[in-house]
Length: 383
Image (cartoon, rainbow, N blue to C red; front, side, top):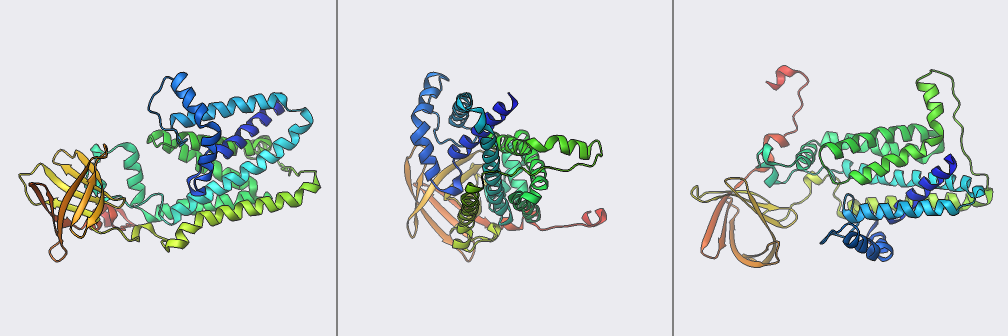
C-alpha cells in the first residue's frame, strides 16, 4: 500500500513538472498545457466552481492552476490503480531522479536571478515615494529585499550550491536537506507576506520531502538518536538504460542552464540595479502646490503613474508617438495624446493633458536612504 501511494505521488509530480509552465523555458510548455487542459479547465471553472472571467494561464495561485493541479492529482491516482506491482520500483526510481533534476534547474533559475539582481529588483520610484503603511505586504517584502544586493547575492549563492549538490549522487542528501531549509523559508515567506507563488513553493517543498523518502529514518537515527548510520545508495539495476539516462540528464541540465543564462549573456546585464533605464524613467515632483497631483513617475516597464496627495495612484501604459508626444493608454484601452517637454539642464518636465498642465522637478531617487549601501559594525556608528 505504501509503495502504491509513493508511486502515485511520483506520477503526480511528473505530471506537474510536465504541465506547470516555467517562464524561462519559453512559451512551448504553456501552449502544450493549454492544448491538453485549457478547455477542460475552463469548463470546470465555469460549471463546477461557478467562476467567471478567470485567467487561464496556469500561473501559480491562479484558479486555473488550482483546478489543473486537482485534475492531475486525480489522473495520477487513476494511473496508480492500473500500474502493476512489478513496475512500481522503476517508477519510484525514475520519478525521484527526474524530480531531483527539476529541483536543480528551478534552484539554478532562482539562484542566478538573485545573483544578478533580477528577482529582488531595485524598488521603482513610485514605491520609494509611497508611505510604508499604504503598501501591500508583498510589495513591502519585495521592495525591502530589493534594497540589499548583498542579501540577494548571498541567497542566490545558497540556492546555486543546493542545486549543485543535488546533481551528484554522493552529495545529494546534504543538497536536499539544504534545499528543504531554503524552500521551507520561501514557503513561509509566501504565506506570511501573501506572495502569489504559494502553490508552486508548496509543491517544490513536497518534492524535496519525496526525494528524501528513503532517508528519513536513517537521518532520524543519525541526528536525533546519535546512532552510526550508513545511507543506502539506490542504483537502477537496468544497465541498458544507463547510457541513455546519463545523456538525458546531461542534456536537460545543459539546455536548461543555457536557457537560464542566455538573457544575461545576451544583454550583458549582470547587475539589474545598474541596468539602463528608459528615457524619462524616475520621479518628478509637481511644482504646483495647489494641484491635487503630487508626483509623476515613469516606471521602467513603460508606465506613467500619477500620485495625488492622498497617495492614490493612476497608471497609464505609455509609448513615444514622436519626439515631443506620448500616447497614454488606460486599463480600458482608451488612448490619450500628451505633449511633453523635458529640459535636462534644469531637470524640468512639462506634461500637457489638453488644457491641464503639470510641471515637475526631477528628483534624485537613487540618493534616498533606503538605497544607500550602509553597513555598521557597531551600533554606536549607526547613531
